[in-house]
Image 1: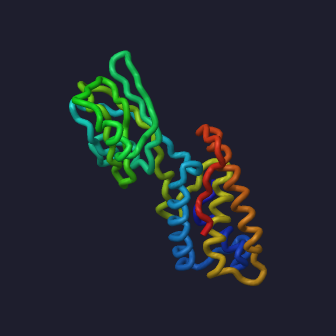
Image 2: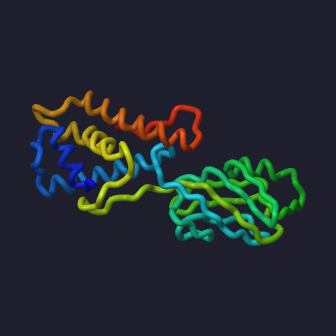
Image 3: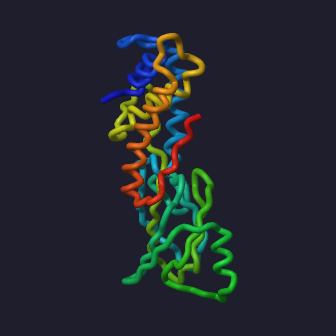
Length: 229
């Protein structure tokens, strides 16, 4: 199993700075690792890239329509959601479910109702706040019930170059070529792998990852691509 230090060594081999078996100095490694952390967090924000999916049940309170979802929220989540994608409401032997809409759409849906109550949620809105998402359910539950949220968070974030890299097929190759593209303008030397070849390798690895995740998620359109810049 590779470590982040191993992948950084590969990057500088591609850039012509070192030869196989060699490593860069500690200050250069630290600077490259900081870039790797930033690139990893950016790419993990994309739905078709991440594998950090959660399907978590929360208890609702009768008469309460507004909540926060996160590790420090009123609904305590396993991870801080980057995006909440769907919901399901359960009370007794009844269920309802739907997509997550905006607060504006929820207000428009609720404005023509009069004192409506239900044991089940009929609509749910969420915003882009971080780390805790604000959500609102409609109508306010008439009693306690269960709300199941589908959401994704950040994949494991590296904290040291000695951390192991174990994200599944394709991810190590993607990390190396993604970081090589980031560092190319600053570090590439004569004999480096061409930027075009690195970009092609990055895109190939990304295509494998996002195509698999898109099929698992049921995304019918082409999966969005994390930024290459």
